[in-house]
Image (cartoon, rainbow, N blue to C red; front, side, top):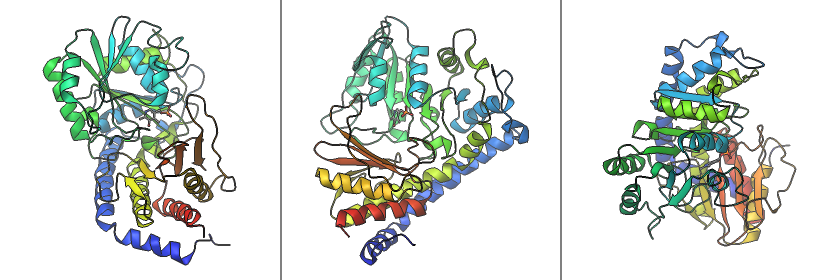
Amino acid sequence: MPLQISERVRAIGAQAQSELAQQFERIDAIAEQNTQKVLAAFQAHKVSEAHFQGSTGYGYDDLGRDALGAIYADIFGTEDALVRTTFVNGTHAIASALYGVLRPGDVLLAAIGAPYDTLQTVIGLTGNSSGSLKDFGVEYRQVDLTQEDTPDVPALCQAVQDQRVKAVLIQRSRGYATRASLSVETIRALCDSIRAVRPEVTVLVDNCYGEFVETMEPSQVGADLIMGSLIKNPGGGLAPMGGYVAGRKDLVEATAMRMTVPGIGRECGASLGTNRALYQGLFLAPHTVAQATKTAVFAARVMELLGYSTSPNSQEIRRDIIQMIHLQNPEAVEKFCKGIQAGAPVDSYVTPVPWDMPGYDCPVIMAAGAFIQGASIELSADAPMRPPYTVYMQGGLTYESGKLGILLAAQELLGE
Ligand SMILES: *Cc1c(COP(=O)(O)O)cnc(C)c1O
């Protein structure tokens, strides 16, 4: 039985797609450039079947695992990188970097408002703070956004003057905030401003959702270390778990000592047969990210045609793979998520319902029918059930399947 999509909804989809040719061309051109970078790095490191063999036990001498770090370093233009499935997720990679860099008495400064929710617990802002950075005597400060939701550069420069500020954290993607995601050029300007005041400050960038959306990464414009998740962009939809850090060698080393333990660092951490998926996923990542980005742009246009407001809108240049859609009421949020779920290859028969997720102050609804649990490079949508009833959607392993998911969501909203 074919998917039940009405003629009217298919027509809206056709109109949206026909209006997006220029956007799609731009996205494809970026994918082509990034594919060249990735391919060149694979070739320079003479990737062969031997790299796909993993290790067990302690995981010493894992050729493929270690070469993958060097390949990420080439692609991201850094001295060094650590790419591991022993990072349980992106939060773990970012937290390991923070624990690696910061010492008691240091100040961590968030440059553009509050960081991503899970990092707030790591920092000790929310939740039971046992074991948090705060618990270890690391002080946290934050530079809020301007009234226009843009980075407050003068306030940042002022805050960095304090000699106790050891590290500045910049988050590239908006996460669940309403500000715009940062372009790599904006990150360059922030790094330049910080360096002009205190050249020795360490600049860390939470790179989640941003990898391969542009042709440069923050590590190529002044960031000392970038961190991210392998079940988002750089895993290409194939990595079964993991995270990475890439940047200055001493900082990658320091992170490795927190990923495992001091003295062992990166020497241990068996890859257990995951190497092939990590390599193949990285190879696909520029293309997969383009598919997800096109899905986001398509979603924006379809929802605009239905009369909803979107951010970014369908004509804006993309800085990450996240699409915000302002649905205005709880029923619409539930319908949209129901449609997205119905378009999934896995768990398509379930209906997502809002629930009280730990760490959130209101019920949250999530739609995801993914091959890899929680992988948000796969088509997914979620929303806190509170005004303004905004849904955040991202992913799409293929544009074709992403498009179908969006059309099913549109159909639910139209009640057809
Ligand atoms: C997803 C995300 C994280 C955390 O990644 P997990 O893999 O979910 O732990 C951190 N920061 C940002 C901006 C993210 O989008």
